[in-house]
Amino acid sequence: MSAVAATAPRARGSLTLWLGLLLVGLHIAVALLTLVWLPYDPAALTGGRLTPPSWEHWAGTDRLGRDFFTQIMIGSRIALIVGISAVAIGGLIGVTLGVLAAFATRLLDDALAATLDILIAFPTLLIAMLVVAASDTASLGTAVLALGIALSAIVARLTRILAKRVLLMDYITAARTSGTSWLGIVFQHVLPNIWPTLSVNFALQFGLAVIAEASLSYLGLGAPPPNASWGRLLQEAQGTVYTAPIGAIAPGIALVSLVIGVNLLADGLRDIGDPTRRGSR
Image 1 (cartoon, rainbow, N blue to C red):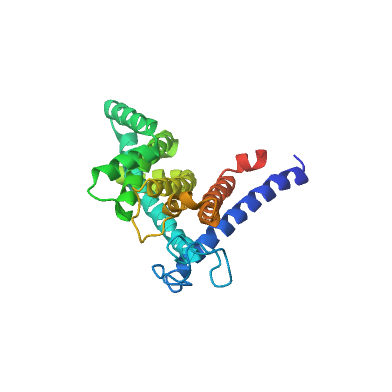
Image 2 (image 1 turned 60 degrees about the horizontal axis):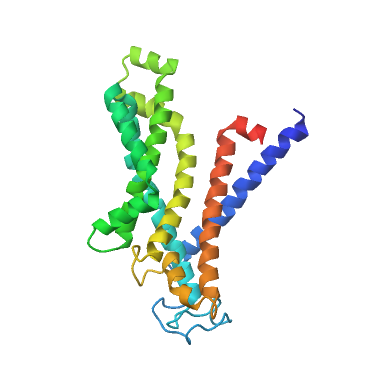
């Protein structure tokens, strides 16, 4: 392979990574900014109903007269909180179950694998809806917990497959022969070797969690008002999409840009962690 041919895929991988970092970094910056500054009080009626964008209200106002740009900014914070928290919960549960399955006996491993396959067969949103419906009231915490539980099956299955591959390596046999405990093998050999692949999967699960939370909020099962979730903003805008289209366009663009950014970031990380894939693109 020529130097030019080898450089082109590497450049595309770098571009993908940097574009993903730019989009995700923008949302992170906006979310952090909301902690110290907002254009208006989120609950304040600062203008007329459904006014168009202006210098006073960059994205206009909603049907109650609240600044819509302020609502979009708060939506970034909620999306990041939900995505990070859901991935953390799903990762903790999933990695634990996956590692246990990899070390379990044949019968128990088969039982766990079959259970995970059944759970994965159900859509993530459906599982999250069932968990939220089982609780007394819909809240942001309930939505995060529901999404974390729903995502854990996917993480557990991937962890099980990766861990079982690592356990077949010669250095694992040498570690067992030298007297290394099972816990030592997990933290010294298994987790460090499967982490690069898991981190990419976590990035993809983040995007899935953000979309699922927006869907829950759209259906009225997510964060209740005054939390300005993008899904709830889309639900509120469906009745005024022709008279005030910015109400549907703005949160839609925000949601898509974050998910695309995370997917580009995951793709860039995959290119870095897999030289074979990077060279073949």
